[in-house]
Length: 161
Image (tube, rainbow, N blue to C red; front, side, top):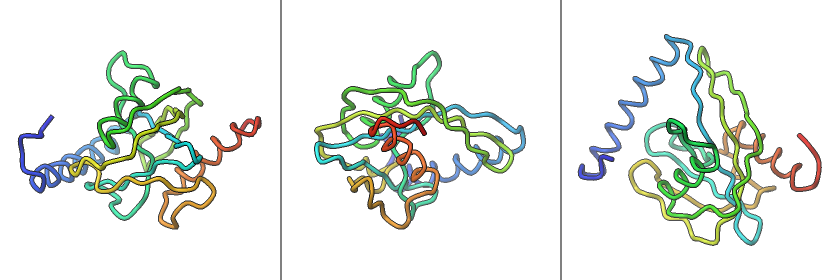
């Protein structure tokens, strides 16, 4: 959207806009609907990203907001491609995860699928994108992401989480 701006300016604007957005969501006690993607490669590793504009040292799942009249699978495929250049294959909606975010609620549609692509961070919204073994995530992986991946792993084994 703002790709005509130099990268550093784009990242600065993202950080500022995100701070305003969080303030608004808290003030209005908003319920925000988004999507997270668990994209696995052939080795069963999961793709994690580090954002350039918030929690910059933490590993998270790719994802973003659902567009108007856009389903979770379509959002997952769009966000994964935008953020990492990876195509999402065989997407499957695993359900909704509700997270209380200090005054606002993040309703995350969790989608899992596979990719055969190698991730490339967009350099604007995403600072880094890498695959990690699902059972050996980096220490600085966000707790909610760990829980979503555990849910996915349980689902892979025929259990429900």
